[in-house]
Image (cartoon, rainbow, N blue to C red):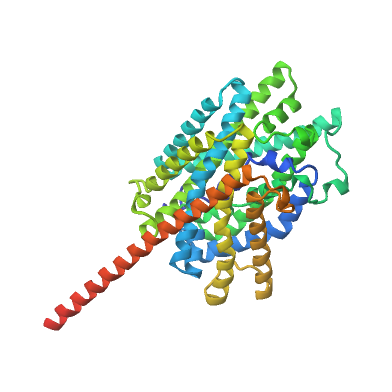
Amino acid sequence: MSNETQGKMGVTGIALFTLCAVLVVDTLTASASIGVSAIGWWVLMLVFFVIPYGLITSELSTTYPGEGGIYDWVKQAFNFKWAVRTTWFYWINVGLWMPAVYIMFAGMFAELFMPGLSLWGQIAICILLTWLTVWICNVSADIGVWVTNIGAVLKIIVISTLGVGGFIYAMKNGVANEFTLPAMMPSLDSAVSFLPAIVFNLMGFELVATMTKEMKDVRDMPKAVFLSIGITAFLYIFGTVGILMALPVESIGLVAGLIDTFKTLFGEGPFGTAMVYVFGTFALLTLIGNMVSWTMGASRAAAEAAQEGELPAPVAKVSEKGSPVGANNITGIVSTVVILSYALFAQGNDDLFWSIFAFSSCIFLLPYLFMFPAYLKLRVVDGKRERPFKVPGGMAVQWLISIVCFFVIFQAVILFIFPEALDLTVADWGYTGPVLIGVIATVLIGEWILLGALKRKKAQSEQESRADNTSENKQAQA
């Protein structure tokens, strides 16, 4: 093994990093809240969305490797403006999502260890965890990768335990929900508002494209992506079934649902209580691993964009070890501000978690509305480029899978903002209003950043033009 590849990620390492980014424990209860029909929705999404999305990601990441990931692809396909918008949404959503993840952490921590902990005590935990995440990402990529690998293993343990435990519980006590074939079929019932959580749970397979410098061979990407897709799909369905076997759908809480499930599975005896603490702690640690993997990937993409003048200069700051400390620190500041702002309006943990989660998820999904058209355009205008991995089928197939993927993302954004999209006469503006305002404000800030980027680009172009003129004048004089 050469010195260049020693210590770098192979197929297993790439798959674990991807698994940690994609596999999220925090929204498993949201998908279980759909009910038994969640199983049908998982299968439907896997076949018609995740597999095409994985194929597209594999082609783009091997054909256009670089630390920018989705930002690089949109820039190649379209122009400077869309690249700036893409990288802004992709990066800033982490700072907006982190509060939701750590609000869930604080709620689960309180449920486990400190049932009387006040909302503001939980807010303090959220802020502490935000800056712990920033510190881990600032120290070095090696430590960050270790944290994400451990997080991936713990996620597999936690979700497998939910699945196995659910089956054992059902054999002893009967199932908590009716598992019939008609019940498992996808249906648009009252739980449709949680459908976007399934889409969200399946996003992020392209994040590892930002870690190409850490890979032994970028051609390993497709194997790793599909290995992680297979494991992710199985675990999500297995974990969802486990929760639904143990808890009636109407009693599944968004924040406390996991801990409640463990309490039901393990019982109230000394051994059961100890197991609830152990697996509850594992679940808590997976949330930290998840935020480390996303902060690492998104901040690297943002730093690369800032070095090109496409984001403000402070975002470009990099440490001696190559960590994007500027982007990481700003992520921490944004997360802290969002936590404090939303805490003032929250009625309770579940409300606080879902409001921030829906808002951040809309921002998170916006770049994918650019990614799939970018894939199509690159196939058309750059079709002769060598592709180490190529999605099978002709252009008709590429159009079909791109349109389907785009539509899945689009409907998820709409349902996050308007959960009652099927019946707008019952719109809950107390929920929809703040989410919609947050999304509009983030888009407008992005447009303001774009104006700054355009000014910097114009100034740079004028400077280069003056330098060229000066050089020509000197040559003419000579």
